[in-house]
Every structure is written in C-alpha cells, then in structure tokens.
Image (cartoon, rainbow, N blue to C red; front, side, top):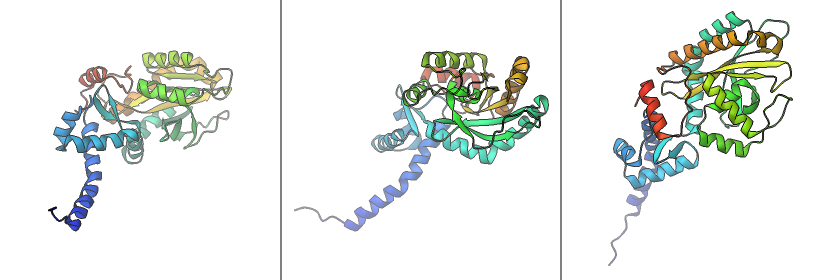
Length: 292
C-alpha cells in the first residue's frame, strides 16, 4: 500500500527550496568573483556546500542568461554580472575614485575628458562621466551618450579587452556601420586594430565617428584584473593630432591612477583581455596578485 503523501510538508519543502535559490545564486557569484582563474564544478560544489546536481541546475540557468560562462571546464563570471558590478561601482565607489584623476587630466589637457563603460545591453559604449572643455571649438557630449564599439576610441578600447569568444559573438550580431571614410568597416581590419590597442595599451581614433573629431582612450582595471571602463580625451582632430604622443601618456597615467585606486596591482597597461583562456588567466592572476 502506498505511503500517504504529506502535501503540506511537500509544498513547504518546495517553497523553502525556492526561497533558498537566490541565496545560493549569490553564493555562487561570490565564489566566482573571488576566484581569478575560474572554478571547476567540483571545486565550486566544495566551496558552496551544494550538491553537484543542484549546483549544475543553477549554473545552467545562470549560463543561459550570461551571468556565468563555462570555458574549458572552468566557470567564470559572465558579462551580465560585470554589467551589474559596473553599475554598482559607478554609483558607490568608481566615480568618486575617478573624479580627481579626471579633473587632473582635464587641467593638463584643457580638452573634454570622459569615462566610458560597456552599456548593459553590451552593444554600445556609454559615457558615464564627462568634464567638457571650455574652448570655443568643441564637440558637445553628454552623460548617457551611447555609440557603437567599433567607431570611437573608447568603444574600440572596450572591445579590445573583451574575451575572444564574446568578441566573436558580438561581431556576428553587429554589422560594422560606416559613419565616415575613416570608420573601420571590415572584421580583419578591426581585429588588427584591437590587437594594436592591446599592444600599446591605448586606443586612438581620428574621425571614425564624426569628421573632425578625435579621441584617445586608456583602460581602467579593477582589483581582480578585469577591465572596468575607459578614460578618454576627446577634441578636434587639428588640436589632438599634433599632441598625440603626449596625450597618450597623460591618458594612460590617468587610467593607471584610477586602476590603482580600485585595487589593481598588475602591470599597466596590461596586454591581456578579460580572458576566456584558463591558463592565461592563471598567469595573469599570479602577476596581479588578484584575490583568489
């Protein structure tokens, strides 16, 4: 004879499990956030004290929404989680830490200075802070301005340091729209440009979005060694181009200064992407002494 089922107990248990799921998700996110190299399923199960079957179910849901990615058997934070972290930092810590360096860069150059991040929809570069030049000839920019990643110095910078798989997916989704004769319009040309940016640690754009407008950008790294944002100087090409070398040094100095305030301990500028290669991340973590 079948045992009677305690409906109330079963229902309560399901409700309890559902209630615990958000806490478990946050626990998973925390463990991945404090690991520089990514974590295997077994290691993550040990750290979270979750059964592997339950853990795998949660990970698959997170992976489907790009909050977590699995690369070569190692789980890492996905771009959606970084988007949330970026938004929090922008409000709570990032902007207050960055403003003194932005003001110093503005004082040294006299040109428009801005901070840009990868917009939460991952399609565009978004300006989150700006100090506008007082010079008569200038381009009007504003907080919240969004532009394609391939057609500005800060956009190319943000694209250059994304994981290779992310970049491939992005290029499959997004056509390279042409805005001026200087806009990069082919994938091979863009990939070469991204490689040059990583080698130089600075992104330069002359009239690729608007004719007569140029920009120079450098990366800002967070404590874990991931690129968080970019800092840039923007202005008329006729003013920026003759001073390009010196402006590159000043922008990189600002990028490094902000990165150090955020706890970044690695070499600057770093040539590494927000890598999806496990061994590459391990070597990077050793150099940066990131939290693990």
